[in-house]
Image (cartoon, rainbow, N blue to C red; front, top):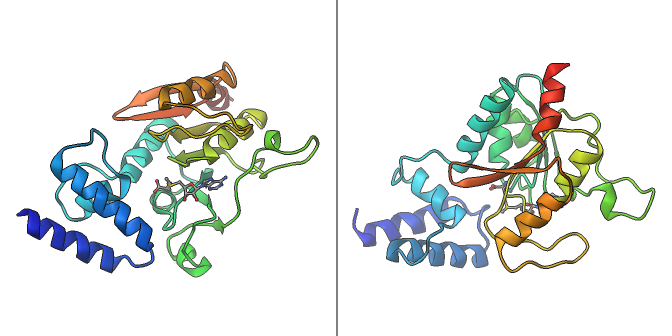
Length: 233
Ligand SMILES: C[S@@+](CC[C@H](N)C(=O)[O-])C[C@H]1O[C@@H](n2cnc3c(N)ncnc32)[C@H](O)[C@@H]1O
């Protein structure tokens, strides 16, 4: 494929997915594509990555497929497990895949663009367009998102929701797996970090139960000891 054909496919992709990209996101996508073509950046924009897979320009599995197969491998099976996908994204792609694997999916993200019917058709049990919030972020005694009915909490690069998932998972003894963003996010209490490494150190410092592992090209935060206890029961 020539560079001109690549750009043509990229424009067609943006046109075919109008609900997915605002004008600002289209500009970010095109900038990411240019950087990928010029080889300037070591990382690749998530949307550009998804486009290359959709356009069959990459044989790699999508980020959602990679994470879903990691979760399937880790938990053995997901059938009938109640899984909350935090920061599920506009089209709830990870939730859709995990629902196909038999999990009972609860997707939460203020950005969800699916209607309840569309979510139902994808096998997703429930969607919420609220923010996931941990108890720790609220005034004493107030409760954040109810995770008690859940078996597992997951997030695929859920940005600012990351720390909330970790704290709520620890508090309610829920196994969690969060694919961390490659850029740092502020802590809930307003601390800023210069690099993603500093942010990862901070996440690790929340509790000795938090573990961060490199899996493929991603870093995944989880609380494995909780998982082992659960499996042993
Ligand atoms: C980088 S996107 C990732 C979306 C999707 N998981 C994916 O990989 O395509 C991060 C998402 O996290 C969502 N998010 C951020 N803070 C959140 C919170 N407190 N509760 C729920 N979703 C949140 C944003 O709205 C955004 O859709």
